[in-house]
Length: 281
Ligand SMILES: [Zn+2]
Image 1 (cartoon, rainbow, N blue to C red):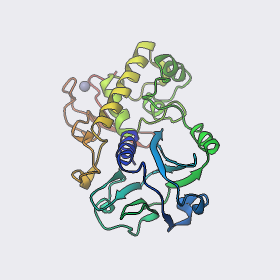
Image 2 (cartoon, helix red, strand yellow):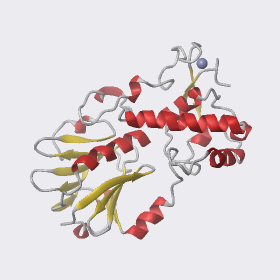
Image 3 (cartoon, rainbow, N blue to C red):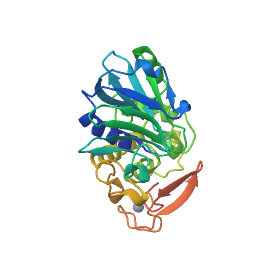
């Protein structure tokens, strides 16, 4: 599943190519994947691409927007005569001819340019919304971990109210958005905090350190273009490099960079959790 750094990377890439392009037409190949009146989108010019939580917003010239959620397996891929870029779930669709069997919505941008929304499992969506609807959707998501509004005071007060393991609490999108599994494991290691500690057992100083570590790993993830696991690490215009710099995620049995102990893996609330029992207390 694309996490915040991967989604931010898609946004930054699309922001380089989409503004100024006009949607000549769009083709909805899977009804479930597009919500709205497709005729209202046609002939609108894209002015900007932005992000809130894991929602990608494509701003249109009439002040409406296309909101995109990639969910588990979504991708946005831009193709023209010279370039091909984007991201999301890594599959062969990154490199093969489009539209493919997984293409759900397809925007013709003129001059041989197109934007494809692909989604194998069809949990993702594209919705055409006015400003009010966008704000209603945004209100469902807590602020991003890297937002300035997520202060140590805010974070500590949220943790004080939960006895759930800290690993579960920091993945809770009601507390803050954007810290997915890979980055949550790394943040806990960086802050030397055991993933099973009850949220409310953290001191203010520990909460502050953990928040700082969370912001650090996400910012590093964004700087490296996100993480690309498995077979698609070297596709230009798509992949990221965070997996080369990962602290604990996927490194079971390997030494902790902080103390040298062997890292362990344990399932916590159903998610594979990597940590160091040597230095994470
Ligand atoms: Zn360690």
